[in-house]
Image (cartoon, rainbow, N blue to C red):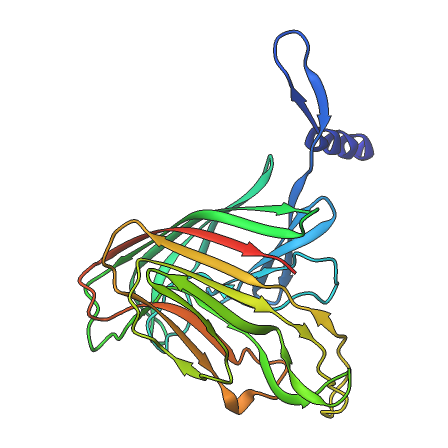
Length: 306
């Protein structure tokens, strides 16, 4: 009996009806699904199109939310992470609630909300995220689009510092032994290409380890270019890890309101530039503390390719 029910569910998700009137046409469609995997108190939602695991959404026991794409076929092709939640400087990321994660016809929809993180456990406002993810298997591309809203309790100030809208965490290794021979730079990313209003530049972590240009923009695109990570960890004294082509992450924020005082910011922790296990790169758009707005609404676009 269970086998018959399971087969029926597969048929429901893989056969659609198109056409109209008295001549409907049966067509095969792709099936999205979500698998929940627990690791201690952390929950990983694995997003699938058919049998390809193309994205993971991880929520920690503290309430951080991490989006990790896997657009390619390489089993080791996981790299940078997107923490899509707002926080004040030095805060511990907390208080995310996944309201729903639903596989639908042609997409997976995610609704999340939470508190703006401040300090170790304080909060400074609320935020909401509604985003839909799709995967194009032929192009090996993960795409997402939705809305991102932040409502602060009160104005930013010298006491609060600037507001971080999200964090892109990655790894860049400098002058490390390579499996191809010799030494060089490798890791999960090569650089970040940045565009906005009258803004267009590339950021290289070792060239500018701390970079906060004062170019103010209402829209911002950050495109992390993935790298071929072929660090020779055995030569470093560790167990071997396989080389892999790491995916890129491209995220765009388009503000619904003008004059929001948003800038690009990035930090590379050079003290950890040999540590392949570290997120030694942090990239974030910032709302400057001089902003006079309490509410921020963005259209958000996400993309990842190998």
